[in-house]
Length: 429
Image (cartoon, rainbow, N blue to C red; front, top):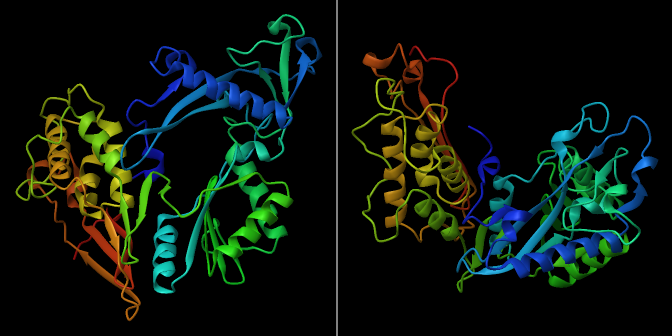
């Protein structure tokens, strides 16, 4: 199954191109976001305006594109702000010419959850930060030239006669994430942080832990004064940082500190989006469990293809992200429908609706972290023996012969990681 973040798809119809944003009722706010972003690029010297004829031979001018987004409160679903991001069209880049390696790590959800638990158990303080226009804080890796973005004109003549020579690591490049990550690691090491050998996005300095998911970071330490000093150090080495206070919304999950000191993870907005995607409402029929206990899904090759007016893969992606982050109780059911995403049938669509009916009933559920410091790591594991075996469909769906493994690991009686997956080989005993 793909990484859950890869499936964290468009929500509430809030992600769009510039021409789509200009047709929205809140178009003026999007226009202001574009102006703000352009001014930020110009202020920080992210490019140089040159004549098209001055582009060196052998270098192509790459198209640019705007990505627009409404950013919402993950609890109330209210619009918090309007965002505009200028991207280079990475699809036009050529391997070996203007990009090479592209891999960039992100912090695992295991590390995020474990950090929250450690904060509660050891009575430590958390602080969230955001690296402003993160990618562009790193220098450009290769020579790149970009078309002037739509909606922008020059004061020096015909806009079509000019292009932008990039000086900073603009979003949209295939290698942009890797370049930013390497730049950030160098900066953190320069002020005394050590990178974890287990998780490349976890860093240590004395009794302080820092985790980062692209441009969103969380510190764990003994006091807020420590964070104030570190944020000042980050600013002094040239990083632009926004102090966001105690963690609230992190990578699509609402993090709430309760009155008794415990924490709750929830994704109500994502659940609402899934419900709306399949054409249901919170007033619809509900189910007490996420899957039928009496039915085992298989390929159903003799059944009609899935033909509902909603995107099977998009809904599966959102369910997968939800299952991997705050709702482990739907993981098995989600994995089963994800297996058939390449060729879904009518029965697979009904199985998705079954999951959604269950989510309607348990809309407000999430993870609750209330550690028991007397307990360490505990692992619960189980496996079936060809539990999905179906003799009638074995020839058309051989995966029914495979056994399924599942495990659930807790620290201090709080969940940190879980899994439900088919084994690769076929077990014979």
